[in-house]
Structure formats: C-alpha cells, structure tokens
Image: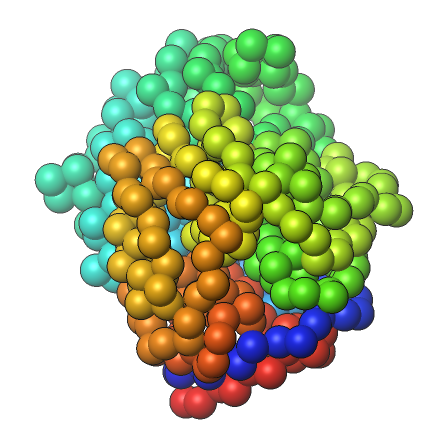
Length: 438
C-alpha cells in the first residue's frame, strides 16, 4: 500500500483509537489460562494481536473476535486454566510480534510438552536470550538459534527464582511472572527502573496477590493459583494516540480531543515530554477501567521548545521516538535524546531508519549510538519515503507530511495496520487529506 499525504490546513474534531496493544495481548493470554470465559471490549483487532490469537487457538483455546469498528473488537476467550493447554501440532508463528513471542515463552515454560515458536525475518533478528536465561534457571529447556528465533521450548516442573532483571522490560517481567504461575516457591523480581505494569494490574484484577514495592521489587507465590475471568473495556492505546497528539500539535490551528486513552504512568512518557516542550495538552474526564487510569486528551497546536530526553522517561516512551522526531523537528532550539540504544533493536534500527527517511524530507538529524540530536525548527519538504516494514515509522512519516511543503509519498505503508487499523480514516475524519493506494 502507498500513502500520499498532502499538507493540512488544520485538524479538528473528536477521535477514538483502538484498544491498548499491551493490555490487549495480556487480556488474551491471561484469559486463556483463567478459569472460565473472559470478555474484553474495545480489544485491539490488528496484525500484532491476530498472531497471538492464532497461537492461543493452536494451544487448544477457543477464542472469538467480533469486530466492532476500525481495529476494534469484542474478544471472548474460553479459558481452561493453566493446565488446560494442549501441545500444538505445528510451530507457533508470531509474525512480527515480539510481544507475542516473548509472552509465549513464559507461558510455554509452564507446560509439560515441547513447542516450536517462530516468526518472520524481522522477528528472527530480535534478541530472545534475555527472556530465555531466567526461564532456564527456573527449569525450562529452551533452545534458540544463536540467541534468536526459531525457539524450541520444553517446560514443566519449574521453581520460582530470585532474579535481577538486566534492564527494565515489561516483556521480560511478564514472561517470568507467567512462568511463575506454574512454578513452586516464591518469586522475587528486582527491576532496575520503571517498566509497564499492565501485567500486575491485570493479575490483581483476576484475584492474584502480587506485590510491588516503590523500589521496583516484585514478589508473589503462585502455588495452586486460579485466575478469575476478565470482563472489562480496554482503554485506548497511548502509542496510537501519540500520532494524533503530535499531528494536532504540529499542524497550525488544530484542536482535537482523543477519547478514552490509557494514561497509566508507565505509558505517559511522550505526553509528559510534549507538555514539557510547551505543548497545550490537557486531561479531561479522568476515570479508572479494570485498574487502569483513563482520560480524554484535549490537544491544540502551539509553539514547542527543544528538550533533553534521557534516563527513566526513555523507557516510558520507547515506542514513541519515531513520532517524537516530528515534534522535535518543529520545536525551537535543540532536542537531544540519550539512553535509547534499545531503539536499535526494534522492528528496524529505529535510529538509523528515522535518520535515513526523515533526511529525504530535508531533516537534519545527528545520530548517536543511544539517541540523536535535532536543531529546530526545520521545515520539511515532501518527498518519497519508505516504511522499512516498521509500522511506527510509516505513521510518523505520514504525520510529518501533514506539515511539510508539498505531497509526501510513503511506500510499503500497509505495515501501519499492524498496530493502528483506521489510522488513515481517523486522520481523514479530522480534516487531513490522505490518499491510500493498494
């Protein structure tokens, strides 16, 4: 698919985004091992979650996905408990979803059978030893391919461990916790910094007594634990919201409201940075859904100032740096990003491809091993760019095109449906002129 993006005069109106990707993944996998039927409304119906559906079904769980809108669905999972899974008769294919693969590693570690887990070429480049190491310490047998997929996993007979995580990672945390659900003894998990806590919130909602201290220490014992079924509405995804939020800030005369967004502290890094840059963003109608904070975001165009981004906030916005680049290019002064080397291990080397593709639009970005620097404001010029099969890069380039001079053409843009189906239609509804060609 090819997108042609024309400069926008302004964006205005109200919008909703599909359900939070991280919570949608967890609703599916924790629903599968719950005792009874779970229901999640506004569940993200997209490429990344479709692979998890395929894998959970292959493990013998009945899953129903009823579409309710662009990227939105009601998910029904007929859970069979942790001991109700069956061995798959072929490799579990995760597509490009590292979240699916890493969570499955934790789940499969609890099972008394052998399974192979694989994905497409991009996912095969993602590191998996970080997840495999603690699972092996617990007693699982995991064979990797030089530290990558395909993986062969044989689980069962696990012992909980006292483990210090090398990095703050929600995927690593979740894999270890999933494995601990099928282990004997007490888990003690030391986190070096803040990581997304959706797993902890969801398990507490399912009746699990799992503790987290202010210093990031997580403990619980899972012997004979039964998970209650889920019944909730998934809040809107902050990572998808980031594109609309940045578009409204950078397209002159814009004012939009994005409804029902997940404002969990572990996800609001970009929101806080944009506010620190002077972005006029306010939270309205704040409430709680299944333990997750939710609010409407009211965003208007306004002048931005350059900032330095480093330290713990980087983890809380690690998926948003491609779209943050658009805001940084429009900001007055210098913006510096540090401590973000993890970006080089995403769907693509996001530092390298951001520099490569935005430079085609005339941007001047200085890359560093762990980030980049931008002097702004810079006026972008429309050009033909590529997505590198990275959905977040594709959407970021589209948002950049809204405030460029002349049309911007984005090749291989079909990848954006991986995480934000309805992205084009949502922007069109707000006043953007975007053409989509197969």
